[in-house]
Image (cartoon, rainbow, N blue to C red):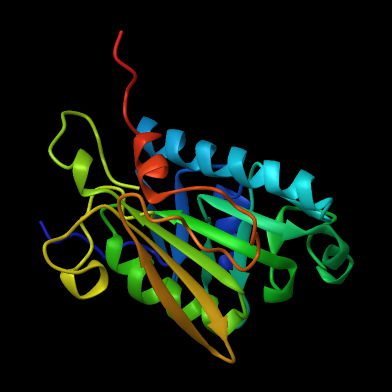
Length: 222
């Protein structure tokens, strides 16, 4: 029996049907399952905890929402970052924010961090292009090869399982944090591995190594 192609969704339909779910995002009208895992959540939570310390230290007007969508205007695309840092002083210009946690303006966003999943091409290619076009100043991609092959574990854009292409994180593939910083309208990328200390323009006093990020996704021995 021939199956019909799945119905494409508009971004408004997606927000209405799936806006409260953490499992899906929308790319060009196609529903994308994010396949979250426990290690994904561990890594995202660890990064969020470290960045919250820096937000307090700087006494900045930033915060990390529990749930947030990024709606790309003019397309049926709505990304759901693993972690996003917003500038609350900019939210007055966000026409949807008072009714639902949806961001449409790049200058509302200080930083996005994505933990690499099986759809790693979206993190390294599609989202790099779209976040740069939107004007997102800083974008982290986390991927860790060290957990690849462990039963029940998947990767984080921190490439937390090293599943990204070699052209993105080098050969041989290693656990890598790629930090993209917007210069004019393009991202300049820096790769951090092992004991490299992460360099963030948004949080210049951040004391955090790539190794610490990757370790957050590992189970603590009993």
